[in-house]
Each structure stands twice: as C-alpha cells, then as structure tokens.
Amino acid sequence: MAFPSQHFLLAFGGPLFGGEQWSMSLRSTVGGGIEDNVPVHQGVLETLRPILQAWITDNGSSIGSQARLGWAKYNRIMPTGLYKHGSTARVDYLPPVGPTQVTQHAPQVSLVATLETGQSRGLAHRGRIFLPAPRASVGADGRISAGDANSYATSIAGLISALNAIETYGLTVVMSNVREGSTRPVTGVSVGRTLDTMRSRRTSLIEERSAPVAVAPGGS
Image 1 (cartoon, one colour):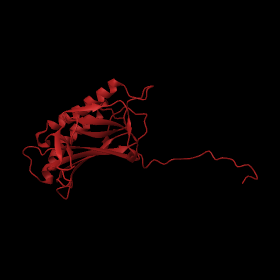
Image 2 (spheres, helix red, strand yellow):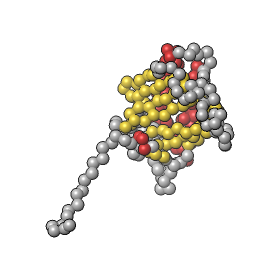
Image 3 (tube, one colour):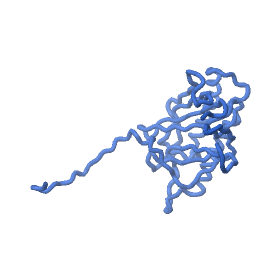
Image 4 (cartoon, helix red, strand yellow):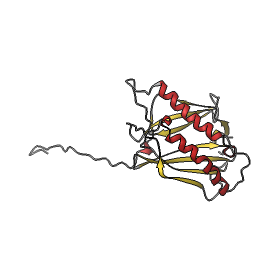
C-alpha cells in the first residue's frame, strides 16, 4: 500500500488543558515553484504561520481557550508515508496562542470536521479532522445547534482556502494509501451536530478518588 505521489503534511497542535496535548494535520499537493529542501520548506511554513495563528485566535474557530497552538511542522512525504528528509521544518509559538472564549467540555471531547471532495464513495472520497476543545454548548437533545455547526464548518473552510491561496503550499487534498491509492482536492467542509471523543487527548490528568466505605465491626 502506498500513496499515489509525494506530497506535504502540515501538522499543528499544542497544549490542551495544561497537561494534555492536541494535534491535527492536513495534506497538500506539491506547490508550484518550490525547491525540494528543508530550508525552502521552512520558508513556506513561515508564510503559513500567521494563517494558522489568525484562524485559532478567532473566536469563530469553535475552539475554546483551553486549547493553544504551540507548534506547526511541514514535511515532504514519500509515497511510502515516510518523511523524505531527515530533518523537519518547524515553527513554535512562544507563548502558545489561542482564542479567549472557554469550553465546558472535557479534554477528550472533540468536534469533527469532514473534508468533502464532491464524491460520495471510493478511495479518498472524504477525510476527517478532530478539532480540540469545542466551545459549542449541547442542547436538550444532546447536539450542538445547526447554527454553530454551520459557523464552524465555515471557519475550517476559511482556513483551508487561506492555505490554498499560498502558491507554494499547493492544494489541500484527501489522500488514500489503500490499494493503488488516490488523491482528491478538498472542495468543501461539513460539521455535524454531535460531538465526538479522542481518548488520546486525555492521558495525563490525575484522577483523585475519595469517599471511603465504612466496614462494620466483625464484618468479613
């Protein structure tokens, strides 16, 4: 199994509720006029840096202030799925940045955005990213509002459109490495009304247990 071509992986993340970490990633085609070396990739990432910061610090991003953007990495990926180069292009946000509005959900709760390609079936017909610390409240039916879902889809679509506008970045795509592999450009974003979970984002919080049970004298 292999991806159909070389491409780039833009990964970004940071601290979550102080003790946890979050990350997510987007794949893109090889942009125009870009030399294949890490210093040039670093320059592309520096161009993408303010776009990521503008997105996450916007309160319309759906993300609560307990999730901060601390780093971003940009790597050329071989069809095998491995990095092409031995070093990576990376930027750090010091201190980490994020929105101001808070969330009331636990760190493992996430909001799923579906990357649409205009296809309903087949390899790479859609992808998913899991956003951290969703800010939307849940109604009596257990779902976020349709208005919130639409607003958050618009925010993710705006981020992808801003990235796509950078010529050296290429185009955001969904890729599959199943069988012969497939690549399809992302043409839209949809967000459902039910929240999801990522257990990997709740690994470090210490649970404090209490309330001992009294045992009657003479009990066995």
